[in-house]
Image (cartoon, rainbow, N blue to C red; front, side):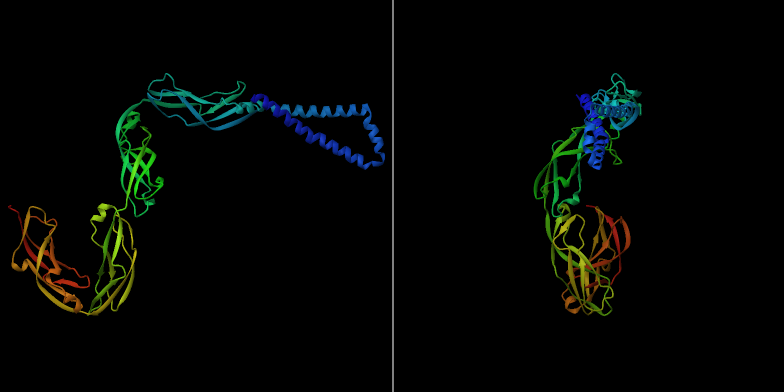
Length: 452
């Protein structure tokens, strides 16, 4: 039926050319001729009505039509070439038993023949490019690439026409499936992916043995963007793709069974309210001290990973007061701790006021050890090595309220073992407006093993 339709379409095109190029122009000439010699119109009419005149005109038109058709048929019968690019390759082999490498995905085909045959060949549905591996055993082979042409009168050339392929026995192995979350930044910052429950945590990978040896992990790629309703609760994602990776993170081309899985995504919104603690850095001008530090926001609600929130007791923000000689207002961005995705407050305004500074000394502050390894005990060599006097520098109304219990003196014993050492003394207090200075900078201690 396609060939008959093609022939009909061909002759219709010829008739359109004759009508457009011959009949219409001749008609226009006759009408123009008649209009020009209107006075002798009857003579022309009588002349055209003669049988001999009509015979000559018909003969002339027949000759013209013959020449046109002959030229078209000659053109249509001449050999030409046409290239079919990127033709998919069909491979015949036992996919359950073997793995084949080296196969081209597409080829180019050059068809050579008459225009009519080329036309019919392109209209035909039988145009498969086939590589038949039936009966071949594992190993290296050179195979021909064949084109199932529609017409035997068409010559063809396939590029490439030969492929060097490798056949391997297909083996399988069971792997534990892990989950990889993609596009987590697209999730509402107040929400957290608490858990991902997959329908199957075991998959089978199939392929050549040397390829399976490369596989370090198989991952289910859970794309957060595919969650339709991003809200607290459980969402289901279907048809999650699986990928196999080597130990460098490169994709390994193996067959994975099943190819896709489903998963239930549990979404929560852990939060915690924390105080904002202002920490002055640097020293104000000589003779002055910080009288007050006022923040427009005293607390902030933070959202993030539950484990990270559990370790947070406050949100610190540092204020540079070095060389400050007068009252000042600061507008600062609140730092976001690691593990925190969102905060109810992102910017704060801090007012720092100054006043005259005084010194006050508090004695008898006990020194405590920090970071001492288990199984050891620390001792001071003298009474002066277990306690220290601390000088407070600040505004009178502030330092007068501080007691020894508000001050912590400590020594850092990270990495110390049995023996006697002279170590630095550090002090800190509960009020950040006060500067704490230990009068004794170093103490002597002895570290012994715990006999108990």
